[in-house]
Image 1 (cartoon, one colour):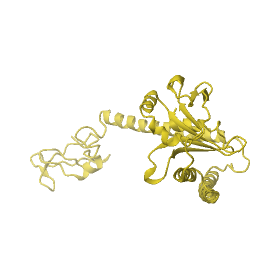
Image 2: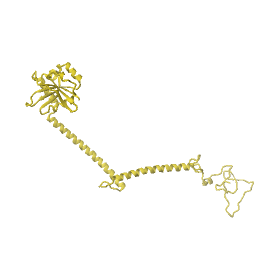
Image 3: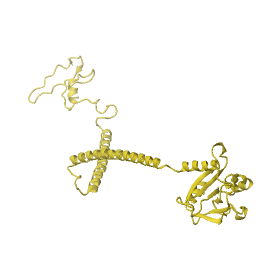
Image 4: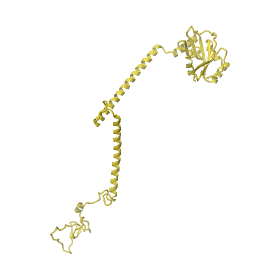
Length: 310
């Protein structure tokens, strides 16, 4: 338990309509405010007694032991009070026999979640009447912890205006989001031919169907790429096909038509016309060699092979 939590635990014992419960009250104001009580309760009902109760809050034992060594610390406020209490975070922090006769002891009960009276405080007449310094110190603390009605109303209005502005911004954002969503739905309907905006049922089935189509398309794309790759590998590996080493994917091969138009190189036989059926072949004399237009030697042997070689 913290000091603040123990102060809040005093409120059920000193309800607001009957008492003014104030935290950290000084004995005076200004430079004379050297001593403070952890809490001060002022009785407001004459039927209950118009008296003052002072409180010192202790959250651990060493704090109490220091208090015992310096009893004058409490005297500055104790002299104005009719009751004086020690409030502890647990039983055992302060023992009853350690307290002066008139002091009371309140200890936090963790199981019951409340303060319990371990030793009642005795009523005593205040040794000194309330001074103007002490009275001003009490009023000052009351003003610090009490919000005026006008300030409460102003804060409430400010919060209302802020909440309204946030609500308008949220509404505008939702409108923009819905407009974007409506445009996407219209685009889907136009492309699919299915209208889903007006009471259509089975949106989940459409979603699953679209997902299945997209997943199957991925699978088909992969199979297509694999098929193309296999075909390329087979074409490169087949003997006698274009794309063999040295041919640069068939660009180095020469067709028969092209070979007919390229003159034979020196030392090679060139293609000569073949006699039509029923015509006699004409031969040059054996000792005479025929030359082509580039000066290459040619043979007059009959061409039997399809590619024109003898």
